[in-house]
Image (tube, rainbow, N blue to C red; front, side):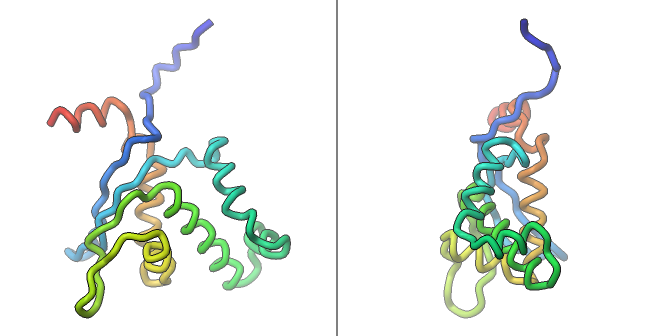
Length: 144
């Protein structure tokens, strides 16, 4: 027996581009995949991300009591997101003569800065929103 839920299909291997702009300034262009939060795949990624932590650190991120505990959890979440859902980043403002080079460690450092946490929140929200990754919308975009 097949069930007909009449729901749009969502692609988890398609990459979408998001440009993060605030007050007219670009804070980066990112290519992200859809994250099915709390799916079996996502839960396994979370388990791998926390496997390197000690029992005490896992307790701290599961039940944060201090600002340091919150920052520890935030760091684990950002690292997991970058490693699994961000495929490319560009256009990130860098002071001086240097240019942005996309690496996981560079991006984790950038998004972990307290002043840039809102950028991570934008990316996380975008990649969690199914409508941004619906197969029908992706096919329409490819036609245009």
